[in-house]
Image (cartoon, rainbow, N blue to C red; front, side):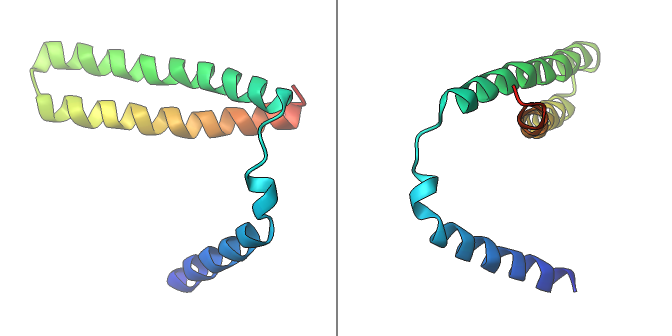
Length: 94
């Protein structure tokens, strides 16, 4: 069931991207640039806080494996938060 949902989603997204190819190559307008900048700035804070916590944990435990995983987790959280912030700013109408 889940596999069919994923496959159908990929097919539908491919068809939609092919039908709107001209819009995909359009440059970002002023509002989109401001939103991307703000979301990137805020997600930088989301990246820094867990990364500093990971460095503190490494200085206490000297576990390099955990340091890698915590830094990787902070990168994932930062990217997800950037998307969330962009959606929030678009809906807010910044």
